[in-house]
Length: 254
Image (cartoon, rainbow, N blue to C red; front, top):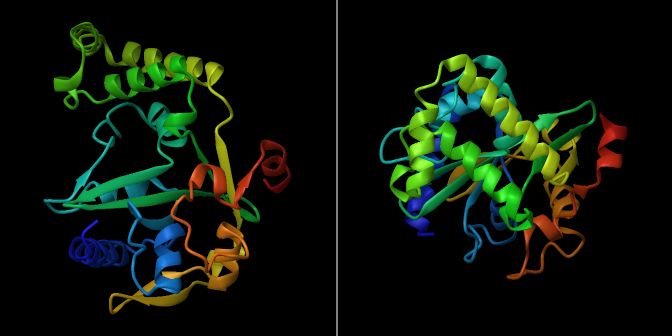
């Protein structure tokens, strides 16, 4: 990512979130870079922002000015509220926003009694059938996007899908999601103690003040281990994050 693009994107998202009173904080690799190196980590592929998982966050993100672009959200709020809520919960663990070379990853956290949690389904961990089910659901939900890359038979299916009555379309999507859950694994769960974000501190990055978990060094140890000050180019978030927990643990903290 070009640092100039990162700085501009951070300035815009900071202004927009603060104008809309959205609680946010620097998270994951971006926070690590800010504390350890006073910049983004040179080999990092995105900018991480943490927020509580609320539909209002998506509405704000979809209103970002051009040339900001968001991925996989143009279907959202197009169906009825019940289906929207299911899609939001199961398919949107983060919001991805692009500005030139910069990718903003807005991490969406569920608020439990004592913990913040996220459930993600990394594409590389899916079986063939769940990958195909996921893409089928996403393709059907995005009425006017992605058509150029679709095989002919899928495009025909998609056009036929949108000729159906809305209630029937909703039912099909609900059943496809149930089928997806049946074949998918439990996903990867992340959980962090909520106290880290209840009273946020501030950190300076590129001459801007950003909210940060507190105490920030304890939070980084919670995510990256005791050796968080040591750079690791081979770090893989869905394998190495110290906040990864099993289903049994999540059941206890909810």
